[in-house]
Amino acid sequence: MKTIIFSFILTILAILFPARFVLCQNVSTMDLWQNGKGNYKNYRIPSLLVTKDGTLLAFCEGREGGDSGDIDLLVKRSTDGGTTWSNEKVVWDDGRNTCGNPCPVVEEESGRIWLFMTWNLGSDVERRIIRKESQDTRRPFVCYSDDDGVSWSKPVDLSENCKDPSWGWYATGPGVGIQLGTGKHKGRLVIPADHSYDAPKGKLAGGPFGYGSHVLFSDDHGATWKRSAHVKPECNESQVVELADGTLLLNMRSYNDNHCRAISTSKDGGETWADIRPDRQLVESRCQASLIHYGTFDNKNMFLFSNPAVPQGRTHMTIKTSFDNCKTWSNAKLIHAGPSAYSCMAKLPNGKIGILFEYGTDRRYDKIRFTSFPPKCCSHPGLY
Image (cartoon, rainbow, N blue to C red; front, side, top):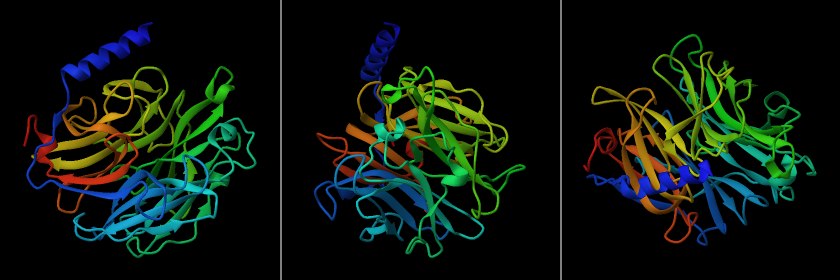
């Protein structure tokens, strides 16, 4: 009953105090993928990355159906800040099997782009993988590009070092990874990920299983990878940022019936994590979200968060801003009032904010749109 009342209150507040629409000069908007148009029936799971050379890479899954079956990993490139985009290129196609969940990161010293993905047999579905009744399991893979995202290496299976054998489901991101910029672990690459695990009191997939999060990390420019301790209970689809003091913050989709995001922190570069806690300022209804460190703007250290900011359903794609290392969030800006779901943000080479997100008029997965606008839109309250 308390959960129902809390959900009702959040819904009323969302109606009475909606996020403000981003009304900026120099807004750029373009639909990069649309279901039913192109080489695939459906397009989902956006990821947006800026390379060392300033090229924008937009990733997504090309699907013939839903979350399982024949899924390919796709990319489009823009060399002019998102004004124009290339035709899509297939990064990974393994026949009728599932190749998805893009989570790239740039190794700044070399410029190499590491792209993390996950694979499973197209005939296996998430529920059976969680219950360990599938023919195979879900596996993490990585490939890389040394030519600014034009071509990609053959994906390599990282299951031996990066997946606990007792886990069933596995997913990288989706979204982006980061490279640490300060402290003892400066230069470390960190990839957010999640998994299912044995939980005696769990109810996931109708059995004793639960969702958890973790990160993968590399201290040798991506040559080898390790997994962190895992974060639980009942959280997955995470994004990670480095705070001003070097602390890492993991922001996760939550299944703990709080109708908001779950967060955890790490003081050792992501190797171990504190107990999770709800961030009630970041309302959610069990959906993926994006979290990035923009950097300094107007002499303020700025972090940005995007998701469908409603306690029920998936609508109202909104960006919120923090100036105090993700302790408080303000300046909510509505990007799309209608159906919307997954998103990924990036700081563009020209300083603008870019967001790649799923949206539609009647359905939340109809299109994947790229929108960019000046950071002033998010750094100040009101309309700009």
